[in-house]
Amino acid sequence: MASRFLLLALLVVMTCSIALATESLQDFCVAQPTRLAAVNGVVCKDPNLVEANDFYYSGLDMAGNTSTAFGSRVTSVRVNQIPGLNTFGISIARIDFAAWGVNPPHTHPRAAEILTVLEGSLQVGFVTSNPDNRLITKILQAGDVFVFPEGLVHFQYNVGYTTAVAFSAFSSQNPGTVTLANTVFGSRPHISSDILTKAFLVDKQAIYNIQARF
Image 1 (cartoon, one colour):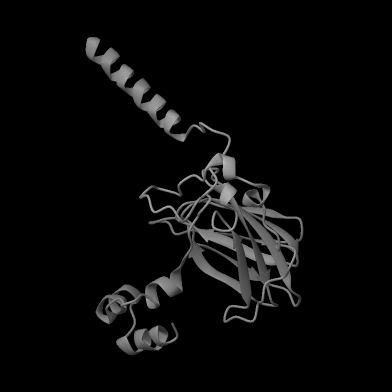
Image 2 (cartoon, rainbow, N blue to C red; image 1 turned 90 degrees about the vertical axis):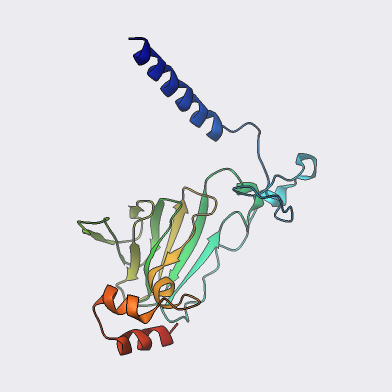
């Protein structure tokens, strides 16, 4: 019986420790990226030096340049753009699509994402983890909202003849982005072609051709 109470006490202490570790102990912690301390995040600016511009960003009303290989442009607003986001666990992005443009398969390793379509029609989707690898996909119209779970591969594709615009919010001040093709075929140095030929079940020349594009 005593051992059960000890185990329960340890669980309570661990739970409280986790809660306290995520508790906000001040009004804000405006990022000061010039400080070189090794922390998981960004060191706080002196509160007495904080000003309105630390919580401000302008420009999401402007369309991004979609003259890219994918026909899309992501304009991210993270802690680097708004220092006041530091420790708040939120960020936002605008995504512009040319006709038939795509935001290619990618992941956000540190955040879930909620996307709202403002203009146009988008096919969106994500793939569940191994071993099922099930595709969850839907066509969205203006005003529709879709959620992408944290860490899962997902995409957005403009299925219309006109431009499309969406806004995404993230559950991290720095969600990170891992675009699959760039990561696998554009790493420096390259991943060995022996590894990639076995992983993708193709010959080496196909791997070389793809790597050359990145």
